[in-house]
Length: 100
Image (tube, rainbow, N blue to C red; front, side, top):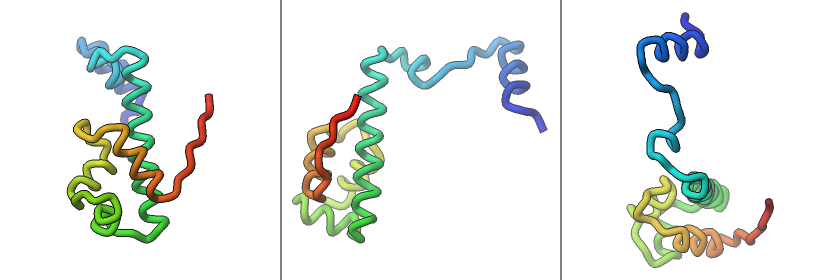
């Protein structure tokens, strides 16, 4: 079995460039943090919904939206705004906590 380091060296030797998704998409550091924040909020929404033992459909009713929209929110879909994610979390009782 080839280890991660060996595989990386083999790919680089073959002319492949190894990088992150941010490198591939040419994201600025601020854009990268934005994407990471959005995905963290989406994950938190999914966790909180499950902890409250709500289905996506029930959460959709609370938020006055559709179940597919809730699924998109939990996946961090680009069409979902940060505003909607935050409002959904607040509706579930999550309190804002700012950290550096």
